[in-house]
Amino acid sequence: MASGTMGGLSEVYSSAKRILLRARDGIERLERFDSDPTDLSSSVKRDITEVQSLCSNMDGLWRSIPVKAQRDLWRRKSEQVGEEAEYLNQSLEKYMWRNQRKMLEAKERADLLGRGSGEGAHILQIFDEEAQGMNSVKNSKRMLEDSFQSGVAILSKYAEQRDRLKRAQRKALDVLNTVGLSNSVLRLIERRNRVDTWIKYAGMIATLVILYLFIRWTR
Image (cartoon, rainbow, N blue to C red; front, top):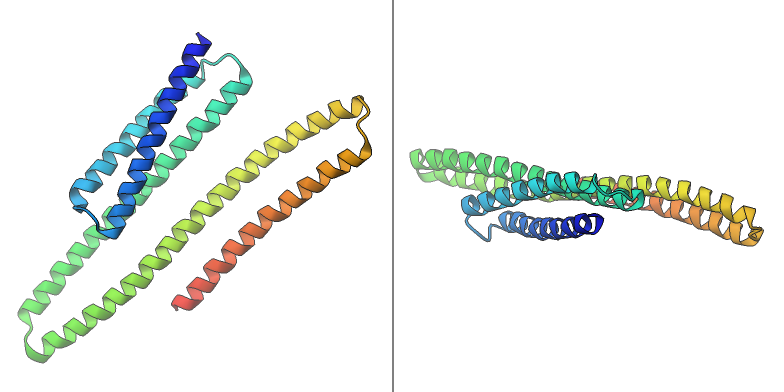
Protein backbone atom coordinates (compact mmCIF):
# COMPACT_ATOMS: atom_id res chain seq x y z
CA MET A 1 0.00 0.00 0.00
CA ALA A 2 2.80 2.39 0.98
CA SER A 3 4.82 1.59 -2.14
CA GLY A 4 1.75 2.19 -4.29
CA THR A 5 1.19 5.56 -2.62
CA MET A 6 4.84 6.54 -3.13
CA GLY A 7 4.67 5.56 -6.80
CA GLY A 8 1.51 7.58 -7.31
CA LEU A 9 3.04 10.58 -5.56
CA SER A 10 6.17 10.44 -7.70
CA GLU A 11 4.10 10.31 -10.88
CA VAL A 12 1.86 13.23 -9.84
CA TYR A 13 4.87 15.28 -8.68
CA SER A 14 6.73 14.72 -11.98
CA SER A 15 3.64 15.75 -13.97
CA ALA A 16 3.20 18.88 -11.85
CA LYS A 17 6.85 19.93 -12.27
CA ARG A 18 6.67 19.39 -16.03
CA ILE A 19 3.54 21.53 -16.35
CA LEU A 20 5.09 24.23 -14.12
CA LEU A 21 8.07 24.47 -16.48
CA ARG A 22 5.70 24.84 -19.43
CA ALA A 23 3.69 27.53 -17.65
CA ARG A 24 6.85 29.44 -16.66
CA ASP A 25 8.07 29.32 -20.27
CA GLY A 26 4.68 30.60 -21.44
CA ILE A 27 4.83 33.61 -19.11
CA GLU A 28 8.34 34.42 -20.31
CA ARG A 29 7.11 34.29 -23.92
CA LEU A 30 4.23 36.60 -23.02
CA GLU A 31 6.70 39.10 -21.56
CA ARG A 32 8.71 38.97 -24.80
CA PHE A 33 5.59 39.21 -27.02
CA ASP A 34 6.71 36.07 -28.91
CA SER A 35 3.17 34.69 -29.33
CA ASP A 36 -0.45 35.71 -29.51
CA PRO A 37 -1.12 36.97 -25.94
CA THR A 38 -4.75 35.87 -25.84
CA ASP A 39 -4.20 32.21 -26.78
CA LEU A 40 -0.97 31.88 -24.80
CA SER A 41 -2.35 33.47 -21.62
CA SER A 42 -5.33 31.09 -21.76
CA SER A 43 -2.97 28.13 -22.17
CA VAL A 44 -0.84 29.25 -19.22
CA LYS A 45 -3.95 29.70 -17.07
CA ARG A 46 -5.06 26.15 -17.88
CA ASP A 47 -1.61 24.81 -16.95
CA ILE A 48 -1.65 26.62 -13.60
CA THR A 49 -5.14 25.33 -12.82
CA GLU A 50 -4.04 21.79 -13.67
CA VAL A 51 -1.00 22.10 -11.37
CA GLN A 52 -3.20 23.32 -8.52
CA SER A 53 -5.45 20.29 -9.05
CA LEU A 54 -2.42 17.96 -9.00
CA CYS A 55 -1.24 19.66 -5.83
CA SER A 56 -4.57 18.85 -4.18
CA ASN A 57 -4.10 15.21 -5.23
CA MET A 58 -0.61 15.22 -3.69
CA ASP A 59 -2.01 16.57 -0.43
CA GLY A 60 -4.36 13.62 -0.22
CA LEU A 61 -1.62 11.10 -1.05
CA TRP A 62 1.18 12.23 1.26
CA ARG A 63 -1.15 12.23 4.27
CA SER A 64 -1.62 8.47 3.88
CA ILE A 65 2.13 7.69 4.09
CA PRO A 66 2.75 5.83 7.37
CA VAL A 67 6.47 6.70 7.77
CA LYS A 68 6.82 10.20 9.27
CA ALA A 69 10.15 11.07 7.57
CA GLN A 70 8.77 10.24 4.12
CA ARG A 71 5.47 11.95 4.91
CA ASP A 72 7.29 15.19 5.90
CA LEU A 73 9.42 15.03 2.75
CA TRP A 74 6.42 14.78 0.44
CA ARG A 75 4.55 17.42 2.41
CA ARG A 76 7.39 19.90 1.71
CA LYS A 77 7.45 18.92 -1.96
CA SER A 78 3.68 19.44 -2.22
CA GLU A 79 3.98 22.84 -0.52
CA GLN A 80 6.75 23.89 -2.92
CA VAL A 81 4.64 22.93 -5.95
CA GLY A 82 1.70 24.90 -4.55
CA GLU A 83 3.87 27.97 -3.89
CA GLU A 84 5.34 27.88 -7.41
CA ALA A 85 1.87 27.59 -8.93
CA GLU A 86 0.62 30.53 -6.84
CA TYR A 87 3.63 32.66 -7.84
CA LEU A 88 3.06 31.91 -11.55
CA ASN A 89 -0.65 32.67 -11.17
CA GLN A 90 0.15 36.07 -9.64
CA SER A 91 2.67 36.77 -12.43
CA LEU A 92 0.04 35.93 -15.05
CA GLU A 93 -2.57 38.17 -13.41
CA LYS A 94 -0.06 41.06 -13.28
CA TYR A 95 0.75 40.57 -16.96
CA MET A 96 -2.92 40.49 -17.98
CA TRP A 97 -3.60 43.68 -15.99
CA ARG A 98 -0.63 45.45 -17.60
CA ASN A 99 -1.63 44.24 -21.05
CA GLN A 100 -5.20 45.52 -20.67
CA ARG A 101 -3.91 48.87 -19.47
CA LYS A 102 -1.53 49.11 -22.44
CA MET A 103 -4.32 48.31 -24.89
CA LEU A 104 -6.51 51.01 -23.35
CA GLU A 105 -3.68 53.56 -23.47
CA ALA A 106 -2.93 52.64 -27.09
CA LYS A 107 -6.59 53.14 -28.03
CA GLU A 108 -6.67 56.52 -26.30
CA ARG A 109 -3.47 57.60 -28.09
CA ALA A 110 -4.88 56.45 -31.42
CA ASP A 111 -8.00 58.51 -30.81
CA LEU A 112 -5.94 61.58 -29.96
CA LEU A 113 -3.68 61.14 -32.98
CA GLY A 114 -6.71 60.63 -35.18
CA ARG A 115 -8.14 63.99 -34.08
CA GLY A 116 -4.80 65.78 -34.21
CA SER A 117 -2.95 67.07 -37.24
CA GLY A 118 0.28 68.87 -38.15
CA GLU A 119 2.35 70.03 -35.18
CA GLY A 120 -0.12 68.73 -32.62
CA ALA A 121 0.25 65.18 -33.94
CA HIS A 122 4.04 65.52 -33.88
CA ILE A 123 3.97 66.61 -30.22
CA LEU A 124 1.76 63.67 -29.32
CA GLN A 125 4.20 61.34 -31.04
CA ILE A 126 7.07 62.76 -28.96
CA PHE A 127 5.08 62.24 -25.78
CA ASP A 128 4.29 58.71 -26.88
CA GLU A 129 7.98 57.88 -27.37
CA GLU A 130 8.82 59.30 -23.95
CA ALA A 131 6.04 57.27 -22.36
CA GLN A 132 7.37 54.12 -24.00
CA GLY A 133 10.82 54.83 -22.58
CA MET A 134 9.36 55.33 -19.10
CA ASN A 135 7.37 52.10 -19.41
CA SER A 136 10.56 50.26 -20.35
CA VAL A 137 12.26 51.54 -17.20
CA LYS A 138 9.21 50.61 -15.10
CA ASN A 139 9.19 47.11 -16.58
CA SER A 140 12.87 46.66 -15.74
CA LYS A 141 12.24 47.89 -12.20
CA ARG A 142 9.24 45.58 -11.84
CA MET A 143 11.24 42.57 -13.04
CA LEU A 144 13.97 43.35 -10.51
CA GLU A 145 11.40 43.72 -7.73
CA ASP A 146 9.85 40.38 -8.68
CA SER A 147 13.31 38.79 -8.60
CA PHE A 148 13.95 40.38 -5.21
CA GLN A 149 10.65 39.07 -3.82
CA SER A 150 11.46 35.62 -5.17
CA GLY A 151 14.91 35.81 -3.57
CA VAL A 152 13.41 36.83 -0.22
CA ALA A 153 10.97 33.91 -0.40
CA ILE A 154 13.82 31.51 -1.18
CA LEU A 155 15.93 32.88 1.68
CA SER A 156 12.97 32.59 4.06
CA LYS A 157 12.46 28.99 2.97
CA TYR A 158 16.16 28.38 3.44
CA ALA A 159 15.99 29.84 6.97
CA GLU A 160 13.04 27.61 7.82
CA GLN A 161 14.84 24.53 6.54
CA ARG A 162 18.00 25.58 8.37
CA ASP A 163 16.07 25.79 11.65
CA ARG A 164 14.83 22.26 11.09
CA LEU A 165 18.37 21.10 10.36
CA LYS A 166 19.65 22.82 13.50
CA ARG A 167 17.09 20.98 15.61
CA ALA A 168 18.12 17.71 13.98
CA GLN A 169 21.79 18.55 14.53
CA ARG A 170 21.17 19.26 18.21
CA LYS A 171 19.54 15.86 18.59
CA ALA A 172 22.41 14.25 16.71
CA LEU A 173 24.95 16.06 18.88
CA ASP A 174 23.23 14.80 22.01
CA VAL A 175 23.52 11.27 20.69
CA LEU A 176 27.13 11.79 19.62
CA ASN A 177 28.06 13.25 23.00
CA THR A 178 26.81 10.11 24.70
CA VAL A 179 29.29 8.01 22.69
CA GLY A 180 32.22 10.33 23.41
CA LEU A 181 32.65 12.33 20.17
CA SER A 182 35.78 14.53 20.28
CA ASN A 183 35.45 18.27 21.00
CA SER A 184 37.32 19.14 17.82
CA VAL A 185 34.60 17.61 15.64
CA LEU A 186 31.91 19.42 17.64
CA ARG A 187 33.68 22.75 17.14
CA LEU A 188 33.94 22.02 13.39
CA ILE A 189 30.16 21.53 13.21
CA GLU A 190 29.51 24.75 15.13
CA ARG A 191 31.90 26.67 12.85
CA ARG A 192 30.02 25.38 9.79
CA ASN A 193 26.74 26.66 11.27
CA ARG A 194 28.24 30.12 11.75
CA VAL A 195 29.52 30.15 8.14
CA ASP A 196 26.04 29.20 6.88
CA THR A 197 24.55 32.08 8.89
CA TRP A 198 26.98 34.62 7.41
CA ILE A 199 26.32 33.33 3.89
CA LYS A 200 22.55 33.77 4.40
CA TYR A 201 22.83 37.35 5.70
CA ALA A 202 25.43 38.28 3.05
CA GLY A 203 23.03 37.14 0.33
CA MET A 204 20.19 39.21 1.77
CA ILE A 205 22.38 42.32 2.09
CA ALA A 206 23.74 41.93 -1.47
CA THR A 207 20.20 41.66 -2.86
CA LEU A 208 19.09 44.81 -1.01
CA VAL A 209 22.17 46.74 -2.21
CA ILE A 210 21.58 45.74 -5.85
CA LEU A 211 17.92 46.78 -5.62
CA TYR A 212 18.84 50.13 -4.03
CA LEU A 213 21.49 50.87 -6.69
CA PHE A 214 19.13 49.96 -9.51
CA ILE A 215 16.37 52.21 -8.15
CA ARG A 216 18.86 55.08 -7.79
CA TRP A 217 20.08 54.50 -11.34
CA THR A 218 16.56 54.42 -12.84
CA ARG A 219 15.77 57.74 -11.15
